[in-house]
Image 1 (spheres, helix red, strand yellow):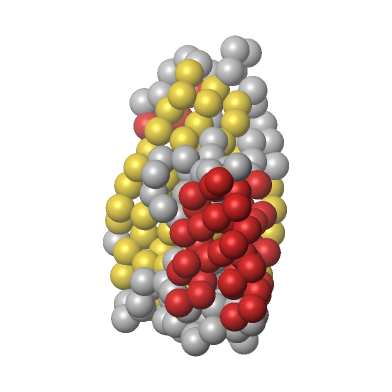
Image 2 (cartoon, rainbow, N blue to C red):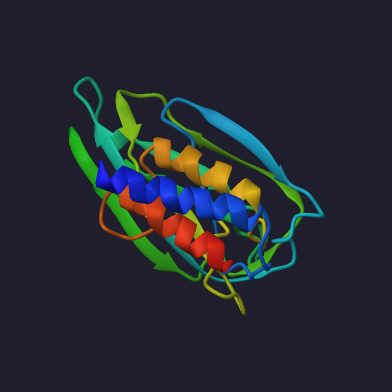
Length: 203
């Protein structure tokens, strides 16, 4: 109960502060794998603030649970990133076969790479994961790191600035259990407090 009062107090102060704070340079942006058995397409338009930003590193986290009736060997997922690279290869692609996965259980990829270094371009992009008895778990993402950015966790929607839209984006992720801003290893009320402390400061 005390924690909830603290959370509500922070929310109240943030509301009084207004829905816009000083813009901050964005350091990273996340893309997401398609859910198992699904695909999606999206687009980065020319007015998006990340267009033209230089990608200097890509952090990949892929966590998959394969259930009975399927074999991890058959798993496959890919995503085409809106990045222009020197090699013109901006497809993140993983298969269970290449990873040496077999059977059922939980399987992981954690990788930091320069393979996708280049520049964000206005383009359509998309992702697809094969159908099987499996699930891509929380904490799976492709995070690109930009050159010259400042660390700004409060810019939750990756727009390049801190405003009211970040609150909505944060709470959407918080409800899904994917908002561990205090890096405690889980998503809880403490993350709400931490988010609003950052949001009030503009970062």
